Length: 227
Image 1 (cartoon, rainbow, N blue to C red):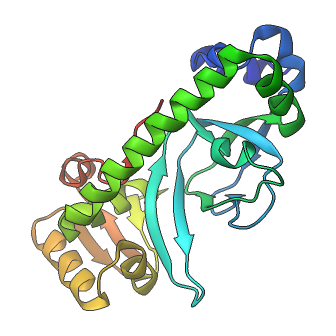
Image 2: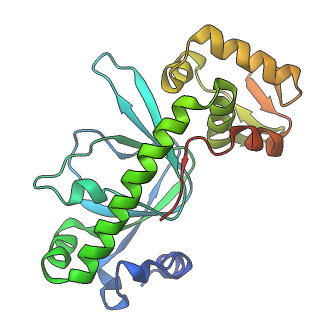
Image 3: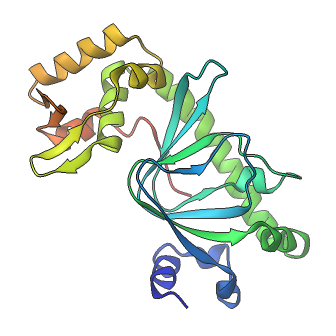
């Protein structure tokens, strides 16, 4: 048995969902930064528990534009909505923004548990209800948050570690689309954050000078609380 898997299982109290007797059915999977964990309209074959790292959840329009929905932090369940459907297809995209580790449970195993274990059904149903409530509340909050707070939250979640500190180097046009704002407004906001001393423009992107203050400015605008 994978010691790392057992460590994550115990750390996050996953016995709430998967009893110890079924540990042998679980697998531990690593996703690299930028790798898709779930892809919209693609089959979902496992129930996943995000146990390390951070991932972004977004939806894509037919014209290729993206809208950020939230960020996932451990512990978080992925594929729970889809796994309850026949021939499940992912409803959103989930992409690793850092290296991520997920514990996976096969859909066939989850389906058997749903048919035979009423406690498991109640636990999963309660989590789905709480997730729906949080998504509705967070969606409203995200729309009402000013752009500087949403941008600060986005930078905090996606900046990468470099020898000089945390660096934000995403495509600004794409970021503006994900945050539902214009390129000009986003550029003005970045300039204002630089003027406040939170960021510094470099040839490679924007260096985060005050990570704690930037995180506080974001206020977790896009972070979905763990169950």
